[in-house]
Image (cartoon, rainbow, N blue to C red; front, top):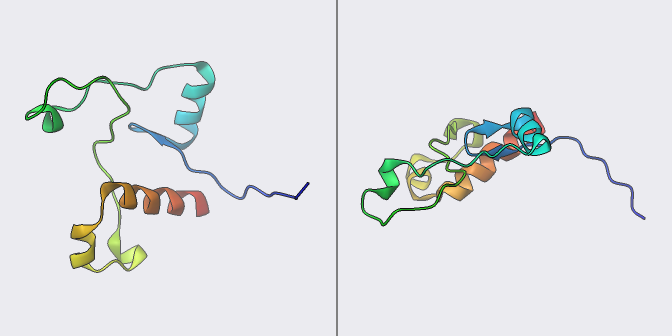
Length: 88
């Protein structure tokens, strides 16, 4: 076996983050909610899910130029945010 050290973790399910999300999972609480109207206005009804309303990323912290920030996918922004949380 290889030794493994967990030095941090980050978890976000919908708007629940970190320890709150972990406790909800342990207790078996659902973190699902209806899709926000901002994404359903042009689509058929979407199922309940763990929708994230906002990703608060400080581009200066990661040295992301503004033109690149506009072109990044939300998933990329989320990975940067969670990586930063895990390393704090």
